[in-house]
Length: 194
Image (tube, rainbow, N blue to C red; front, side, top):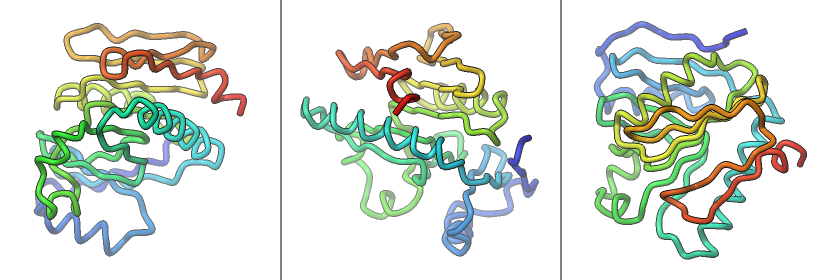
């Protein structure tokens, strides 16, 4: 069952109007595609939310321990990609120099930047094709490394610029953070069991 609903509005809302629309409806989750259409998304289930949090914590602790400078974001954060889409990845990271180049006003809205690192975790209501399309969009807009984790089909996909998508047919693996995070390995089996 796919609980994504797309409201076909085209480009009738400016960036400012879409930001205000999201703030006025802050109990709902929205994204906006590059054509300006609004995508209504249901909240994730509790297990998926916990899975996302475990990944965020593990990556955050690892980054802090190695003093890798940047900003780590959760799934409630929206970014305006260079193609105009507004997306909210489950986990994302922006290097400090890119973050610091933004104005305070830009940081308070859907920052006009594509994170260098993205993780999307498929929840029960997510359409796999939709998520794969989003991952490709992230890479086309400047993302350097992206992981799509599909708990339901027990698969993981690794996206990087100018490389074929790597597909793993098991979650009993460790995903490597190379080249962005040398030495970082995410043990998906351990996260799944926690």
